[in-house]
Amino acid sequence: MMLKSLLLLVLCSSSAMAATSLPDNRHIVIKGEAVVRTAPDRADITLEFEAVKAESVQAKQQVDAQVNELLAGLNNFFIDEKSISAGRIFVEPNMRYDENDNQVKDGFRATRKVKVSLKKLSLLDGFLNFALKVGVNQIEQIQLLSTKASDYEQAALDKAVANAKQQGSSLASAFEAKLGRVYSIQSQEVGSHFGYGSNTNIERIMVTGSRINTVPEGKYLQESITFRASVNVVFDLVVE
Image (cartoon, rainbow, N blue to C red):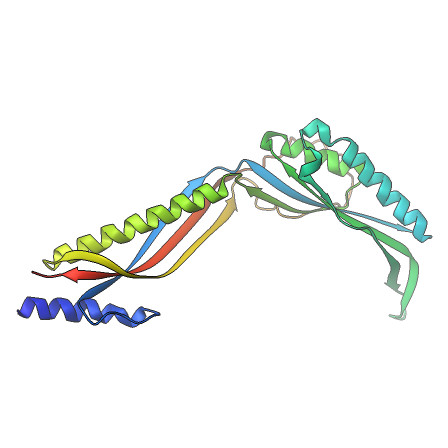
């Protein structure tokens, strides 16, 4: 009888962390967690074009020409129209500060962003070189992803559920009890993140000098994309 009372005291003490109401009978609160890792198979790249000219129409025409040249060469990288998103072009006065720290107009600035999805990661470095060659001013972001993200998220969640069951059974057995039915599933979280491998500066590339260099081609790698899932479960306990 003392063992049963101790079991109830120990298990109910963990219920202070629960976000919802708990049963009055014997129970156990478990957090199941799991991680699934996979290699990326797609890159989403955001590019920005910019031109500053004395006349607004000149600035717009330069950006239009550069974007059109980029679009014309995308077939070489197996990028189809469905994998391209080109935003609106913005034209505004280009302002600068004079020697008296006063703002003065200095021509017009035109900007436009283009986002492409590259499905052959082996072509990533070549594509970036091509984008710089046609006149992109900033490679704003490179996001490496998996086309099967939803499958891996589900796999992580399934493993988190299995982990919760395993933990519950193990703890219950340690106190000479058995795991009962599920009383509630309080919350679940599924998410992913990625960390770059050989190049930690991949997210943003600014054009600050010559577009042509003689260094070997860069490698844009990451070890894996990590999918994490967690689930909080309340189980009934069966004590004989």
